[in-house]
Structures are given as structure tokens and as C-alpha cells.
Amino acid sequence: MTAPIAIIMGSQSDWDTMRHAADTLAALGIATDTRIVSAHRTPDRLFAFAKGAKAAGFKVVIAGAGGAAHLPGMAAALTELPVFGVPIESKTLKGLDSLYSIVQMPAGIPVGTLAIGKAGAINAALLAASVLALSDPALSDRLAAWRKAQTETVAERPEDKA
Image (cartoon, rainbow, N blue to C red; front, side):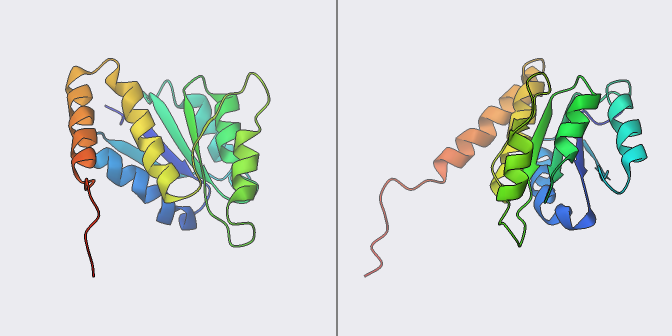
């Protein structure tokens, strides 16, 4: 059986960010398939992946991209699956270029756009898990437990460090 979530990225350097999505999903017991699928350098690979993603058994695609960040939008244009885009922080524009590219999709080609960098990767994983949890009560319970554990790590009062 194919993993329910595909994590795709434009280059190896994007893994530093996208591994946070993979780690979060692993913590929730969700299998992933991770691939480098560049919209610009491997367009045939992108087309083959996105056109075949649904038939391959994927339910959600998480796409991380930096710079021009065309990968999430192109993937969304080629598949009916939900696509969540994670802008990768760039040196030049700190990821704003990526964010603007992903968030400004034309009507009819939706991409759920998350925050720039690590927070976006983690939230993309949680959003994808939430989609799967709609039809998976056991996953819904694991997701609720994960959120409860996160809440319990927040102190009620600050520590006096004086």
C-alpha cells in the first residue's frame, strides 16, 4: 500500500525544512513518501508524479519549494488531491518570494499555503493529518493526544530567573 501522504520538494536543500513535516507525521504514525520533484529541473518527473498521485493511492500532497516556488502550484494544477505548500526560507528574500509565489494562485487551482520554514512544515503535516483523521478514528485519537500533549507543555506562569 502506498503511503497516504507524499512530501515533495524542489531540491535536496529543502529537506532541512521538509524533514519537520516528515518527523511530525511519523510521530502521528502516518507513513510518507518523500521525493525530490523540481518544477524547473525535472518537469517530466513532476508531471508523472502529480498526474499519477491519486491513482498511486496518495490522499494529500505536501510540497515545499523555495525561490520562485512553482512546485506546489504546478502539482495542484495537475492533481485533484489537496496540496499544501510550504515556502522554504531563502537567503535572498527570507522566504517572502516563496510565500508570495505559493499564496497567489489563480482561482480554480487551490494550494493551502502555510508559514515560511519549519513552522509551515509542521503545520502542513498537522493539516494533512487532520484531513486523513476525518475518516480514521484511530488517527483522530492520536492527533487529539498530540495536541493535548503540546498544550500541556505550556507553562501557566513564567519562571522567576532572578
